[in-house]
Image (cartoon, rainbow over all chains, first blue to last red; front, top):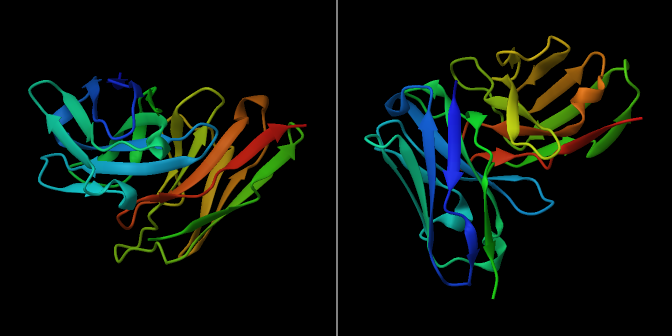
Length: 121
Length: 112
């Protein structure tokens, strides 16, 4: 079955960097786009970024442009989110999610359990 | 950016009764292919979101037929024909037409 497992979260200070990972299994990794979506404590969902199945297209939310980078490694079935210059308001649970269409970029269907990033001085 | 507005933001429903959630977008989500790029998700307490409805009205695999999606353009509705205790959680609409993707604020459903 489809499984997505995020890792790399933790407590960091403002201005520092963190890289999140998401390891996928149960489906052909190379055929699907992926998304990162975050949820601040007690708040709603916010779309962060997406990468196409072949990594030729990468998309970002407005407040993440220039600070976040998304990448994927098909040899490891792993998705990454590099977060730089972290701010207090980046504090959230970060979810990795698979796109619901093969070879397209639509919206997510399967989601991981998430990893918590806490930015605090 | 496309702004998504849900209403109500919370509702309490008696088991067995119907429930409806509205989602309105600031721009039409109707693509030239004829599909509306609007999806619905449910986030149960303590869990990750799960896909309920895609492209406005297509139920995801395993979703009970008590759930239905309708609408076109800028006005969409999620309906639960008979609410059950397991339906508790927060419902989100999400547009899939433009970057950045955007969500509604969420509608929290509770059982009376």
